[in-house]
Length: 555
Image (cartoon, rainbow, N blue to C red):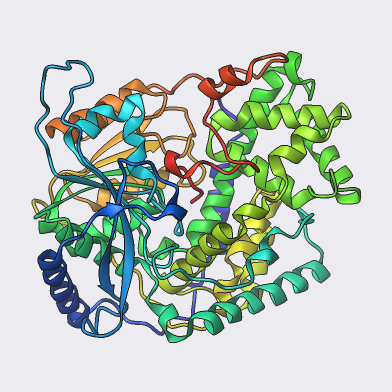
């Protein structure tokens, strides 16, 4: 399934409009002090280890899960200074062959996982070993998850009162007026100020370089001489930073949905490229809905489906659904369809029902979830801190306005919402880092497995190609003509086979390999049982948020 090639058009636009490099860096590249500090912290962690025990009740984790903490320096240039504790979770290897109950599987140490974000927690990850596709890995590896620095409960960050993030309904115009832009600029300045006031001078230490250093301390605390790691989305970026800083500490690494590690892309241009890519994926979704017009009745062409969607936006702008769902909530819910095609049926069904006079499915799908307010606010704070700290950003609003106005002409779906999310970085009050030049030479690093879907919008495919070029000896597996974000142990048996072969046996395909795309989802037809729908599609929390255990989070 192919849509109009708006991404390539917008990509060409970016090359012509972004002539000036982002400004505002006052930080320095990593130096010998931080390197020494990491060595000191890792040695200390190796000696102390991690005392695993029963998980705290608030984690709501099953009995087989064990929890502990590892201490890391807030500032690696001062390893004897303030320490923060990272929460760590583990499920021991079962050593049980899922296909042969009489065979004992030898252990291969710990497999550490990061689900991305920035701002996502991996504490629930070890539970994934209960799922059939993961049982072979669960037999051989201790599955280890953790909450990175800043992510609750690991020295959690906060930038505003969490109740502010669930006020609904929210109205977000696709093409904002000048008065609306001024309002969002003011909000971005206030958010950046809130981050600085709530965290103080410690704020600058929440960045990708320190995330990579923390990972090495965690490796040492687990007693692993070399790291086996799987990262998704943003986890691929700081995983690549780790591989550059600590190549001799790497055993095996899987990068699932790779971020473009080119320093020039971190992070301003990366977000513009992402907005451009979402336009194409949004068209993919609309084409699928049009193909199933007999089920949804939203139009027989992509353009007709778009008109149906825009009519819904216009109605929600005037009268929010259930008093809770405005255009902002609508956009958030349908943005998830750009990440995961297994969300397509639920989104199409809710839109169809609303058009036909029933707002209830849309309200259930998109309304703010009060119970998740603190978690969402914390995740947003970490996302903002890491991206703002990692690199220079334009500090002149005119640059943002120019670039996003031009991009929105060809890619209106996500452009401005993405801009508002990142705009606090223009007014950031902490020192900036210079992005590390992620790169390894021949023979410096064991082969790394990179996974990418050709039409992934959150991490556009060009990023995987760049990651592959920069990490010498790496292998790239591409899922053709598919756009799901995060493809390891999903519906594609070919992809899963490559991951199993690599992590369990150390076998890799040729330098580049391809898997045919997985089948498109089937539409949710009227009367289909709830059990059947749950077995077909990924389970969601209320409001369309992916379950933490699925390791699927935006960006």
